[in-house]
Image (cartoon, rainbow, N blue to C red):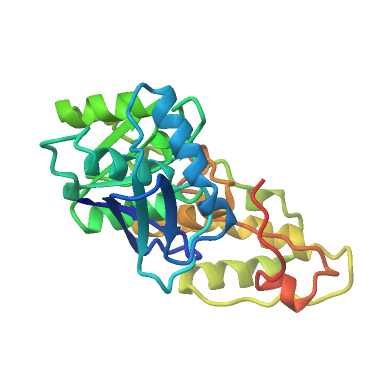
Length: 287
């Protein structure tokens, strides 16, 4: 009997709770079962992982394989657990013998060929990984996003074979230095576009200087939306922590724009939006 433990991260809103992937291989009829509240997309990972390992030239155990995703009371969804499950099986079958996997976290979806695919919501996982002083192993398509987190060792790969090679060599990605916030030119709407509206402009300036809330009220066409959109142009750029928090929201939604990392967000919902829509109700759809 063989047991291995590998770490990964779930996606729960804009947080990324730790998930421990425990793999147990025992005698019995060949099977692979996943427990720990996996949803359909996670249960289907057993077919992706089996095909990926076989097509990459690894041996898939012809025994009873049990995968536990702990904690058991946390719902798991998506293909982000594929890489951690595959590494756990390789470790339990001694195909990754002699490696200390407890210093790594693994996130990525596997193709049937063994290729690694990028997933959404990597930025919160990367921030949580840094807080726990671990290294993050993920698909090459997520490298730029994970690199937004400073001082995080990253291992990126295109397929499961590269993951194993880089784990054995201990080779980390070379990080590209990001421009400091003082050197970033933010292209925000300019208050100079506003003609007249002296009192409204003064209200915007006072609200920006004091960090105050502001309510603009009036009939359609009086310039409320135009004024509000110019507020970001007189606010200072986001600090490092603020930018990371805002980017995490866009990361989970799959709408992260690296070029606008330090820009303060401006949202303009339609006037017919319901209160539920304004606070984020409805179904979750990844675009």
